[in-house]
Length: 302
Image (tube, rainbow, N blue to C red; front, top):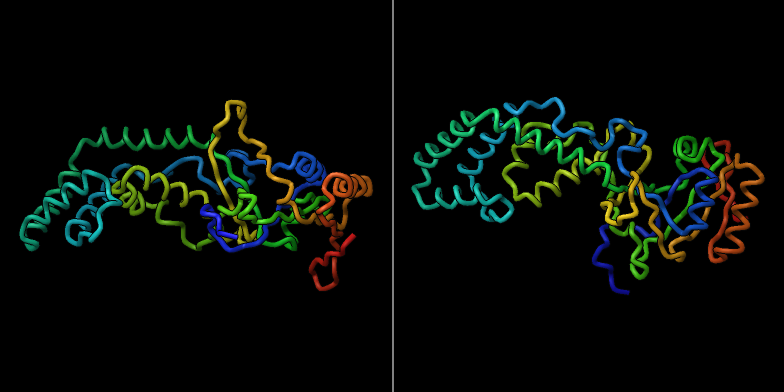
């Protein structure tokens, strides 16, 4: 069938690790919980504060350098830049592209650096407050690319007593996670965490700056977390009834393909989950996860 325009990858399935009780709730409700980053267990995940530890002066210097760079080497397409930058660049195009442009660049840099410092600090604080106000309403669903991650079974599936649910990336059913993107784990933090990154952001159109900010903060984690092979999809709180820091988003039951039951799952939990699958989700297949001597999991159809 035709590719869904929302699709951002070529994957067929994703996996979600969870406790046995959560697995029961997910299968019965045909829904997944999307949470605000404020509920995440990693304090170094989506930042609670923007430009933490970066001074307004450092950002202002970076903005000035970015202006100089743009004036001396203007891009062919300026549509991604904000209106003020575009206007100055258009003016510079009308003059001799030699010493005069360098003079304009120098004046712009001086003008930015000597502008009202108090005003710049207030502007930065306003942006920071906007981010604080945004976080409670931001909703992220975290998924994994594999059902056999030992550390994930331990941390997110309650020490091997929980389950992993496999979901389909269906264009036909418009699965929410067809828009998921892979989390990156760079050794060095993204540019957005630095004054240079802010210098770049503050020359863009507002909507593009916000998009880059969200992508930089949502889809980057430290290398310590690379074992998760994580994918994420995000949205914003939009329904009046979503008053907390999460919402449970229902999806078509056709998205649910398989469930893997932990090797240390309690007999009562296993029986209840098998009953849900057998009676309410007969199209699903259930597997029992088992430890192997070569330090991997094997999965056996029940």
